[in-house]
Length: 129
Image 1 (spheres, rainbow, N blue to C red):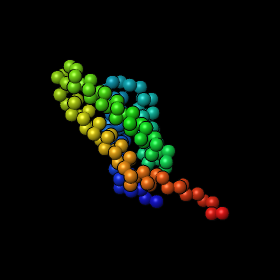
Image 2: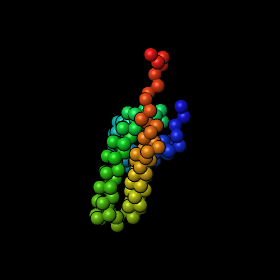
Image 3: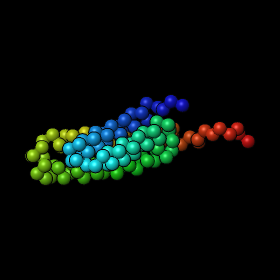
Image 4: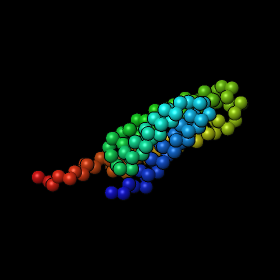
């Protein structure tokens, strides 16, 4: 079964900003390649679960998306209140775009239409008894 447009859009809004953050963080901050591999693997698992319309994918997307959104809001507050805003004026708008993207993706996942897709009983190969 093909995923609904809202599910695809929610998947992109949740994973795309985090892919960019993981790649930039690994390259700029000289993080170990393991960090990048783990982040990309986690995002791939979430995207796979959402696009295959699995209930565990929805839960993982909502929980991890919420954690990442809260982290983004906390970081945005630290940037706006601290000296980083003046040192790098592009950081605040990028963080706002990051938080808005995650919040929009979460709103789509929590919408009634998308939740209904993930509430359907799983299709099994066994014939009905």
